[in-house]
Length: 294
Image (cartoon, rainbow, N blue to C red; front, side, top):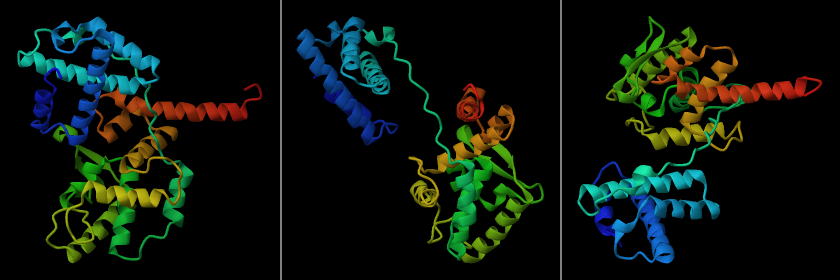
């Protein structure tokens, strides 16, 4: 169907496309081709497909109740597909140039409230062992620094500056940033590093698995999910939720938005401003509960 096999083969040869993405692209295109066949009786000439035909398909999807997010993904699929056709001289035109994706509602970041975070550190019983200390320290470090999962995994002993009470992380696009630590947090990291060196002297990474091997995302995710589940009913319970929690709690307690941007390592302030929506929702709730005319 319209060079579908060639396109799928191309996707599979590109490392940036996962098997899940390739399957999604294939499904989207199958739906599009079925629409062309049913509505326009187009079955053998992709060159007659223009922007109007594509818009008709998007209208049909909307009327069928398909969400804007799903429609945007299908538009992305068609963009990649027609770009591939044109690049390989399989179709002279690219009708996607005039297609504008629908606006998407921004999802508010999920975060753990302050009371639940307090309960996590005060009431949850961590294992009385090296590994229990590791688990608790990982959670604390996520919460007090807002670092990303990849940044935590790549920490080494050299990342910790005990005299300067700070931690250096390597973020996106290999951009380094330094995050301040409290004296107590610094001492915890120093003491843990000593224990880790004794237990796993060959490991270069600050945190390791139970076998002394390098941390990997799924291992950390399971740990964080396990502990957050004991204090909160939020739907998402990932390391990134603790990053959102860090930023939201700072903002709720009066921190400057630009300072939060620097701590998170955001390239643009717009990425940080999403947390103001959570704070605004909190203000609305306070207003509704407190004002006599609300």
